[in-house]
Image (tube, rainbow, N blue to C red; front, side):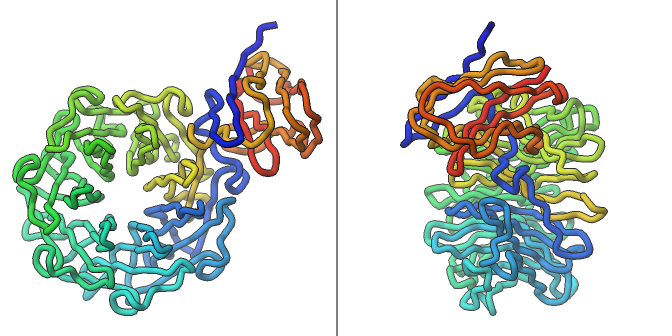
Length: 513
C-alpha cells in the first residue's frame, strides 16, 4: 500500500506547518469561520476591519441604509464582545443625516480612531472620532469625541497614525471641474495641525479627476496616498508628500505617479502598502480587455519608478475566477513578504475572494487552490472590502453579505501558513501520516504520541463546516496510533482532517475521489 507522508516537525516552543492546508476557513471562529451580523432592518455594510493585539476583531461601517455609522467587536471565537458598547455594538448618528465609517486604526493605548463621511449643510464632510477600549466615545477628543472637516465637499477613505500620535486622513472632494485629493492632519487631541498645509489640510489636483483611497506613512515621515485618476478611462495613481504636506518633487513627476496598468483600460486602486525595503505596492482591479476585471498589483521603487523585477514589467494581473469580474479591494503582507489581496469575485452573484502572491508577484500555489480561495457566505452578493491579520497571522476579511434580503456585516477568518499546524500536542516529530490520499472510501491516519492526550478528530469541508466527527474528546495513550477513517458517504472534493485538543490543533488536507 502506498503511503502519503505529511511531515510535521513539532516542538512545544515553536510553530509548525503542515503541508497543503493554508487558506481554509478557521473553524475556531464561530465554528465555520464566518460571522454575519444585522444591526438594523435595512442594509448594513462593513467597510473596514482591524484586529486587536488580543485577537479581538473590530468591523466598522454603516447601518440602516447609511443613516448611522456602526462599530462591532467580536471575541476571538466570533461571539459578540459584551464588554464593548451594548452587547458588542456601537451605533452613532452625528447630526441626523447619513453617516458612513470607512476606516479604523488602533492606537497603542487601546483606543481607536474611526474616520468616515457625514453630511454637513447638505455637503459631504470628513468626520474623525476617537473611542475608548470599551466602546465609549473619548470626549477629550475634538468636540465631544468628534472632529468635523467641512472645508470641502469631501469623502474620507483612509486613516493613518504617525509615530508621534498625529492623525492623517485622506480622501477626495468635488473640485472646480473634477475630483481632487484631500489630505488632512490632526493633532493628538483632535484639533487641526496648523503645521500641515493650510489650516491642517492640503489638496492636490490633476488634469482629470484624482481619487485618494488609501494612505501609508514612511519611516522618514513622508506620506504616500494611493488611488486612481480618471485618465483614459482610469489609471493607478500614487502621490507622495513631505511631512509638512508639500509634494515630494523627488517622487515621480512633481510628487505624482500614474500607471496605465492594462492598455488604456479601467484601472482602479484601493490599497497601498509599504514593503520593509521601502518599495511600494498598489493594488486594486483592472479591465482585462474583455470588459471583465482582474485583481491587479503594481510594485514601485522608492523613487516612484516601476519595479520591473515584479510580475511582468512590474505589473501583476490575476484572473481570479475564470474570466469573471473580480474586484481587488484590500491588501496585507505576511511576515515572509507574501502579499494577500482580498476582494470579491463574481460567481452567480459575488463571493469573498483571496489571492496570495510570492515576493516576485507569482501565485503562491500552496495557498488554497493554486493561490486562490473563494467563499460563498450564503447570500447572492458577498463582498469583502478590507483585510486584517490577527496576532497569530490568521487572515480576516470584512465586508457584507446579502443573506436575508438585506446586506449584513460579515467577517470571515482563514488559516495562513503562520497559523496552521500550531499545536501543543505531544506528537513525535515526523510521526503524522495518512494513507492513501486521495481517498476512495477509507484511509488510515497514523501518528505517535509522546504523552497521554484527550483528542478529537473531525472532517471539515471547504466552507469550514464539520461534515463528520471521527471521535470526540477520546483518551489516547502514549505510543503509536492508527485511526481508520471511513469517508464513503462523503461527496467527491477537498476536505480538512482536523486533530485537536482543547488548546491546539493540526490540520491535513485530504481529497475524496
